[in-house]
Image 1 (cartoon, one colour):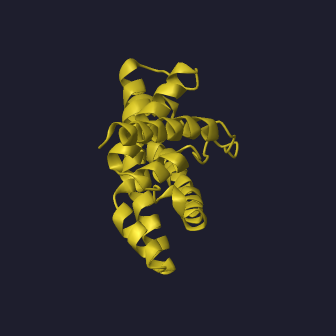
Image 2 (cartoon, helix red, strand yellow):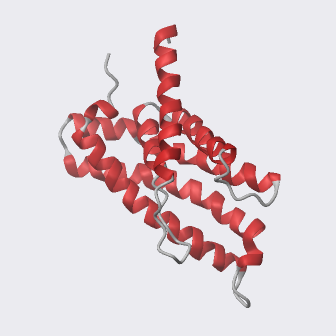
Length: 188
């Protein structure tokens, strides 16, 4: 990769991480603590545009910015690492089916395109929220309602948030990539 191309790649990752942070500031909770994390949308797009690694770098940056700006909830240093660095890095797995997404869109196979976008973003969400689920048990179990199994509590909170995030993000990413192909196909 040439020097200019590498610099552009890194700038795109930084922009995705910063945009994820800014979009993530939008209030999306319904009062019950469950919400949608819109910040993953740029992470999914950069992962599909380039690769899983680019999505992971942008996710790491997203977590770092949250920590540095005081947006992180800190219980322990290990919890911070797991939830704000590792979990958001896992959102980069949304790039898993990037070649299939690009091929389906290039061939104008919309049903296939939206299926691959759904599958790819589901993988990114699933891996990320599985990490949050584990952290929910190990670090947040004392917040479970009295008498409720902490595993079930973490599954309800993180599973609900993960699924809601996936539905919204998959639709947003699909529409973004469909209407603005330059987002997935870097100009030569």
